[in-house]
Image (tube, rainbow, N blue to C red; front, side, top):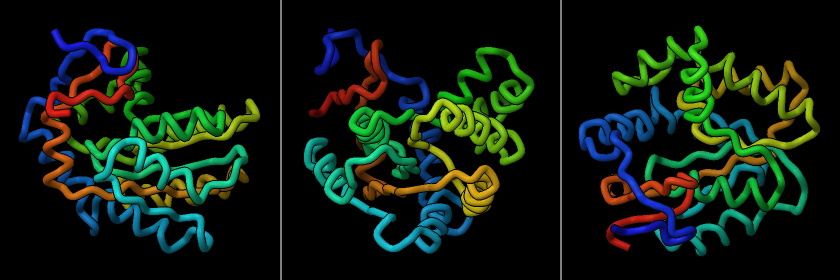
Length: 220
């Protein structure tokens, strides 16, 4: 059996990665520049201060993408929002940035899984949408995300938000919530990747039992 290239742990295939229809649905949401995640990307492209929005090419090797991501960043603890289509390596690069800057890596999916595991009211509501492959609505997502950011801030640590926001409305809501909480968004990072390449990567990737951000792929 094939093992993780990083730590030699067992590999598995995520159930939602094996379903082409589910992959296409996730990409429909991301690449839609009117109501999807690309609308959120474009929102921050407009509102961020000059130089604090960085877009990089996600098609080269992991090491090369990391160089592109790190090049413009100063060596200071900061708050980040990280964008990239599913399959772009966003989670892997987010983990590298979080470790380099000693900030909390916050994945929206992990927030959902934590609440679902606890059986919280918000978690149960989120599960209904996730099970259908639909976008979790703002009235469920935003309270969970903002609460976590405040907890991290209160512990004196920066954060890297990965997988949120996913629409222009969520981007605006996050922007407003950060202002209300007197938190500054220092950098917005976007990994750009063609949709066909992103889908190819998803269908061939395998997940490490120890760390889902360890990169593994049957074709590489």
